[in-house]
Length: 533
Image (cartoon, rainbow, N blue to C red):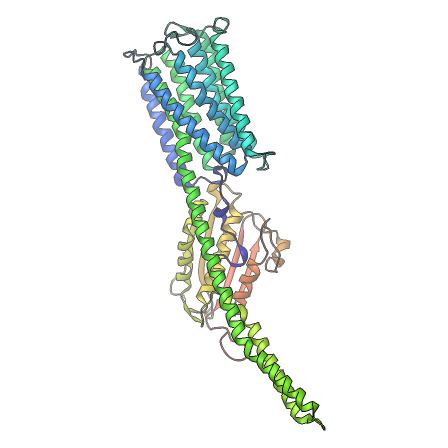
């Protein structure tokens, strides 16, 4: 645990909009995009080639899309119930819309359920109304994500219920428009061939909406959700290009390929949600277990402290009570024995000092420290700390560079305390770099000798730094730059290093990160009594 209340950053993460995309995740997404582009390139020369007519193919694919989008909407609504994020709500509404509008589209597709619903143009119009759903939701998401206050008025249950009612009503209205009003809409199909209205109007418009969605997310991309939405929009753009510009009619290779791109687009965000929500709840479970352990440890510490206080203080208090009663008796004699009373009052004073010493040392019961100083390999201390925090560093996309000098002399001190100091500095560095883009998060930890009598440990981040005028106060108690910080972390770190006979300093230009330097003497710190502290 970090010293003085420095929080584990990812314990507060419960939304996909807060989970930064790691370099590994981005490489995976770019690899999938490359595969989709390669499949598109392989389809282009043969897109117009007619293949056997499989009427059941389209309903089968769209049934899978319906299930994918519906599950995606449910998971996004769950995220909204936790975060109350309007951006997440917009995505949930969009995916619910695309799931529901698949139903009338399947029922109107020529050959599958002929005559059941709508006319010859209904299926094509429903397809383009369907196609606009996800890109429109992504545009709204991108516009809201940087402006929201993470709280919407009213009950989340009522908001979700009303959004579902409105989506159902909207889908029913579109279904009525494209069925009862089919004859009043421009023609999109001539038999199985797409009309010029599709080629020159409907399809370019669909591509434009998806491209706008791609662009607005691209320019604000930060979270892992942003990158997966980019991949979904990329797949939809390829779908639209193949569907009308290259295929030009149903049941061609391009037609079948476009349905494949649609299916992939519907699976992308669902895959992300299943993966990342599992990770999020795993982190929450681990955090809960950690809190339970801390609570149990604190209760044991409190129990140990109270037991020790009761045992240690009872004796001086009983001595004070008994001696004061005896002194009172000697003073009540005639004549009073003042000399005996003075000696007893001296005993009472000593008992009071013993009780005070017990109370002064109670805090030691709450400190997880070594009972005596030990030789410490600074390089091992750094490596063990970084290994312990590997998960947090990796989750936040922080690249770590450890530059450790060889043949460093051992220092003498309390290993647990020094590790707490180093861990606290690393946690502070992670927090400082959170506003940076993933590529701009670098943590450097260095060790080097300081002459022949001391060893230096440096922790440097690539965050925004500390204003030079504030450097003089960062180690003062209750001074903090964090909204929820206590201002005790660095103050306790400084105290620990000083008790080791060393010093902790900070330097920054206020723009290019901050550097914290720990200087530890090789010889153990010695107190005024002449004993190692």
